[in-house]
Figure 1 (cartoon, rainbow, N blue to C red):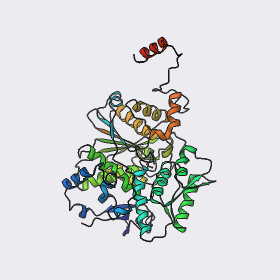
Figure 2: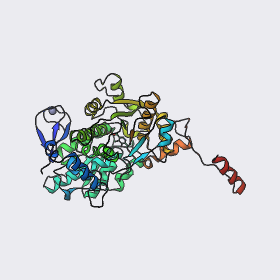
Figure 3: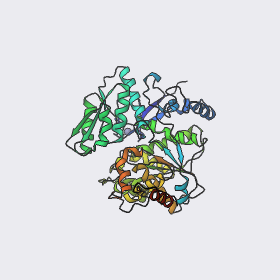
Figure 4: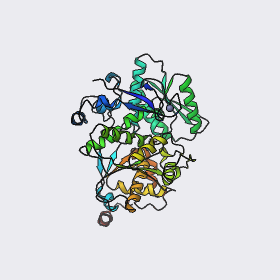
Length: 442
Ligand SMILES: *Cc1c(COP(=O)(O)O)cnc(C)c1O
Ligand SMILES: [Zn+2]
């Protein structure tokens, strides 16, 4: 059976382009491209056959099918040959229940999809395995590509560096000099990326990397590249699979450039189109108030994007004022009866610490989603009988300063931390330790 997919313009211009072509935007109108699958071919297998196949592959030993992304190979990048797949067992992540957090909010079944439990510590791995594998195939077939480049500060560059190194392909990370912390830089440096620190801002880096991509045989890994969304789309498929091929009532997801919510929508659309599920969840995109153009558009009935200058936020990966995938995201949110909400810095910090009490170790972006859920529950928009999935996008271990600052009480953004926990300092005497124990466990 010949499954296939190609790039097409999201504005509907004629023409399709192979996934192996170096093309990032529609040559007719300049709009974004999306990957469109031949659903007729995929329908030659019944929904029961797909469910069986995905069930057999789930976390299995044989590579690369044990990967959550490559277990769905035919739905992701069907023309990619197995020998070109660069995988580090991404995906297949846990849906963790947070019963005490849920009860405090007056909710019932709330689970967190742990997409940050991944090789480089964020969900960006899910997309990067697809993009780097495709470049490996392009190079194997003789395309003269020297390297893969991106202009990211944090999680994208870490994922790119890891997968490119694993593939034996050079990677280039272009950053604004002096504006990036060592913690954000250390993954690409350790993995041997060529890191170019340029005296400009993030937008300046973006312009430079696009020029390099058009002139120098460097492949662009930034999020206008819709290959990444095909990998990220598997999060929706996994959620349905983990719920016994049911969809939840709500999915809450943090959004910056809005590629991930577009991917989530695309995943649920594909499940519906191929008959594996028969219902749509509602989707909430959560934004930091300091960078919330989507939430503003929602308040105005999904008005046109008005780019803003994003202010500093603890959720640094979503500090984006002019989201690339705005149109794709609004299209998805309209189809899924979606909403978009903004939360403050103190709210995201408290919500993150609150959910940690169920055994998580959440990053600030997941905190944004948890804070939005807190608001929706308080307003009665989500109720106790509804099942909710919160998408966690990164590992809290990548954001140690945020966690330490919160519990030390030194975080300027959260001056009155509600879930602060500090060590009890004691003299080396049994009675003192015992008394502290009894008081502490009271
Ligand atoms: C990239 C990123 C996001 C935002 O995803 P978009 O596709 O840009 O909306 C959220 N959280 C983390 C940790 C990220 O790295
Ligand atoms: Zn077009």
